Length: 142
Image (tube, rainbow, N blue to C red; front, side):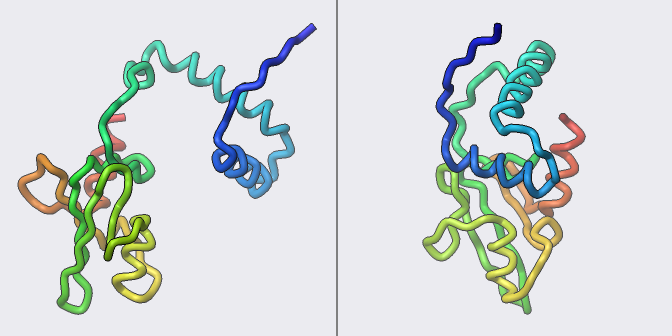
């Protein structure tokens, strides 16, 4: 006989999982998927050491690309540069928290591809780098 315990999960995260399952036509119980995710983590943690260490580094996780605290972002549109900065765990633009996609769209006033339009300068970078290049580099090291 199986026994179960309750594990607290942020409501926002659980609802995101429910929406994801629905939008992908997956009829599994979200609790079943959470159990699967734990098993997956256990299977991978032994050969992926970064899964075993909790990072105290602040920054913004943009899909596979981590932007450390104090990273600067910029975009040139119609000859004018606009800037944002990672503060703690958020990207701040005009005093507001914003996602990279929303940042690029706000600057241009239209739908843009943030990977192709935003340039990044992390605290240890000497030069500005296109976000897409940084993403490709991050994916190559995984």
